Length: 282
Length: 349
Image 1 (cartoon, chains in turn yellow, blue):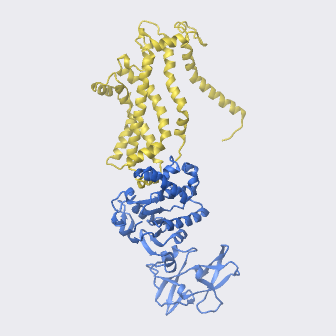
Image 2 (cartoon, rainbow over the protein chains, first blue to last red; image 1 turned 135 degrees about the horizontal axis):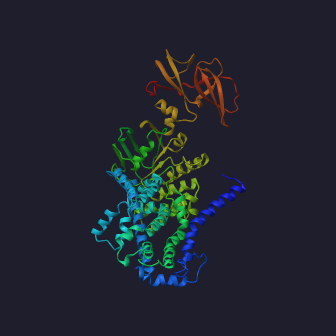
Image 3 (cartoon, rainbow over the protein chains, first blue to last red; image 1 turned 120 degrees about the horizontal axis):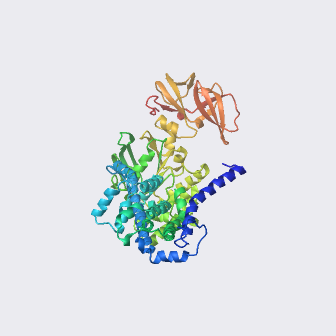
């Protein structure tokens, strides 16, 4: 559609700019808060320009944390979040690509049942099954561990469907050519399917990494040992202090730092990400 | 190098649909056999059964002396060229060629030698390091053939390899495939729906219809002596005209015209005459008949005259310099008349 109407152009840009402001302003405010002293936000007038405490706030959060609200230094928590996000995203990709492979390329008894069973899990996110899942994880002795943090979140119907759709677009002749070329099922999977879904894997990795990193409820529930606190759940612990005013400057410092890794992942994988969602090169 | 023997081969799908029935052919070592037929006649299914991509429900397939009914495609010692090329899109041309050899554990030096040799034969050496997506249709087709050649298999199987190419390239590639096969001397089975491709390529043709063999023979045998009216109408371009005729005594009547026939018979027959077998005759010649011209197709060297004889359609090929008339008097040599049973379609003479 090609239209040249100045009024529509201005309107479209106004709507877009407004949208950007709505999203960006809170982020900006969080950054401003992280550069002021602790009393700046309690005084009633919210500053809109950066203050002079930035270095001290970031140094404090990275080195010592806030002992009064039981928050350990951010470094450790960010490492935990990173481990959890990586295990969840790689685990989800590994499991869903193999299950999609099985569903698309093999004829086995109850294949449809398996497909629908995976489909049904879409209706059962962690929040719905949180009590029984907690019971299972606790009984298996996985509380306060990386396994406990990540394994219950790994099964993924969405990723399985995505890979199923990708595999369905790969022409059958390619499979037949590979069979004649002497490639068994696993060789076909490794040499043909995985390279052909490379961009989809990258796109999915970005989405799942952010999903894993932003997990809040589950880590909050199963970690009681501060060695396994994750950063997103940790922010909540900082804001949640008894008999004191929350130290918003430190909370916002933690929030800004917690935002960084997902942003970096998106920036560095953007090219592959966009390709994976739009391009079909088969 | 090997012979391929099909003995009463059939394929019935689980739903009870018989795609291929009772096929018996012995393919000689080094022979170029073409399976030809209209779409849905089972020719591709039959080829895929040879390749091992479809299960065989009846009969046996032998490659060399070995029954391969239950042998995996990779172990049948065949190579296949697909209609849409089926090149691996993420591999370079070189890797595409080498993939099958690598999977068989061929030594690296041997792979390099064979790839270089195939590249030289097919003149694809200049783009060995390109990805298939950067190649034209004809180049992709060469790579697909290269992938078959490097394997040095007992047999090549071609599944309509030229139908994705444009008309001109198709003719060129057709010639190249023929020369290549002669040079390598590899037994080949080639599937096509294009009778021209079938005629030009084949040592022997197998004409299929409805999952059954209509006729097996050399291109000239099939062209000159089609054994059924189906083969008669399918092979040859322009197609043979098939009209209803009657025996009256020992004369064959086409409407009011009595034709000179080499044989005798009774009752109704289907009469087939190739357009190129009809020649002009002076009116009144015994055995000649008059055709009312309906329309004319100019082909350059020849001219196809479509016409009407006693309510039935006939086509006649004329030299392009012959005068155009509204009515032509035509005659055919008695030996050029093909007679078929109107019910069974079987040849009568």
